[in-house]
Length: 268
Image (cartoon, rainbow, N blue to C red; front, side, top):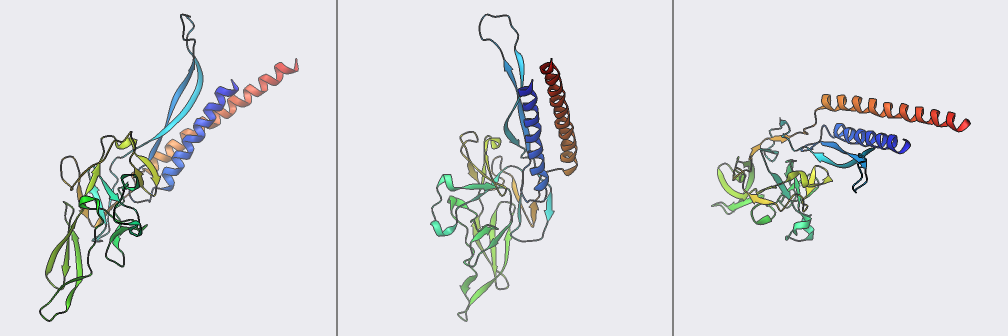
């Protein structure tokens, strides 16, 4: 009995850890909540015996990610981007490591908070470049073509349309197309490996990514001026936490009762 009750305590403790992580990241852009998963443990004789399988407790397995769409928050930032529908932004490694990004070094995210670095590269808050067509970093020059007077026009505005096409305005009305955002989609997004900071890596379970421009095939569209918030519902998580705490307390009381019974039997 001790080992069975202990598995219940371990499972409830694991569930509380997952719920706490969801609540802690309720304000994280692009965060996807997890759901604790459990399996029954059985002991049986795998022969011709008629003995029935006996329950031996519960074990925890890999938490399941929920990739449901989070709510969109308006920011009016020209480089704040949200994905409406399926797909992930593709991030490369820091640009100092070279232009070529190996598949194992790519990361995928739904957090579309981007800005320009001092060299005009489109990067996220951690300095990782957003990759476009051909899995290459997107660069937006701060200076445009020289005018008739010989002076280059300054970058005044950046816009991104629903298909991921990036346009830059120089001076008053010189519009130049400077890049194309490419999104990634997976056959089994639940197989992605969570590496923190709302980022994921591909795995054999997720399959290889399929790249394409927004609104191609099953890939969603881009909504500029918005950020996708966490898909965590605080109310639901608190209800789950209360339920899990009751399960933990119940297992604790069962364990105490088992200890008391064992003590009485040992005293005889």
